[in-house]
Length: 446
Image (tube, rainbow, N blue to C red; front, top):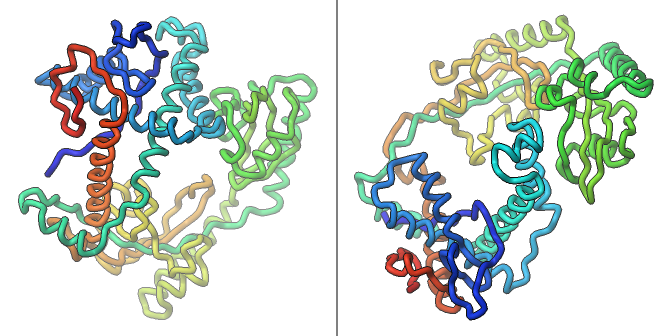
């Protein structure tokens, strides 16, 4: 098959370095429009590739890397010409994520500088530029290819033209249905959690450290070890109740008790910066009583017996008893990764690790099994294996969706190649001398 274009984000964007007469100066690998690609961009990518695999021809690899970087800059140049803007709201979540990850890894701004050679503000500037280039190039690429479609006839043609020995082996897949019962938390338990948080809130107001109490009592494992600190976030990143409470606070202020789908919280605002805030919280998750969990398990085990005996269908039982959204579809489970109803064994081992689905017979129903849902709440479920798809070579009947997606990706890549060739012809591009012998696969540049 033809090699494909890979559009990569610049890992570091630096200011333009150019002599007055417009000639290339040391450190610049290529000029694309009014933007540049530096030698360091190429060498950094080469070093990363060497970490992952053996590089047999370093110069040829540099040429391929440079072509990808030029393609990215062509997209950026097009975005600038078309006045496509990357909003602060889109940049800030990524920026805060990278910076917070670095601080978490190194522990302090001083340790970060010692390890990287860059100050916090210098890294922030580099990340900001990298993110803007990435988001802008992705936006332009999307606009260029959004109209590309493939017909069923084109999908068939794409498949038929694949060499027989290149057809991939498709792993065994499974279709499943489930009935889930998540016991309702008692009002007494909800009152207990509210009282605990009210006591913690009062201790903070009287002068105790919110961070210390969060470390000791918060049941959010991701933030508790950081004193409850969440890092900067903008509107739309948190669930509505939490977001409304956090953005209503003044620095140092502690919120009333807030209930969300995850449990009960108190929040303290640390800092407000533009349209983002940094906050810490304490989360307490109400617990389902042992009696309610036992009742859920017994209910599901009884349902499984009735289904096996033919007294009720699995689909009807799901519609009557299941407490999750797929109850309306008779319990059929949808794969969130591709929207299909099929799952690989590895995915099921992660999501249904206690059920052992790959070892079940088709039509078999599992015993009731305890698990924690996506909100970290306790629940029980029974699972039926509806169908197994044996491992096989890809074909149009069983794997049409996969083949369609591959055909669409190929069509978009072809469209991007054609666009890039045309765009390169009408964009000022200048290569450093050591790259003038490069033979680019998708661009005709000298």
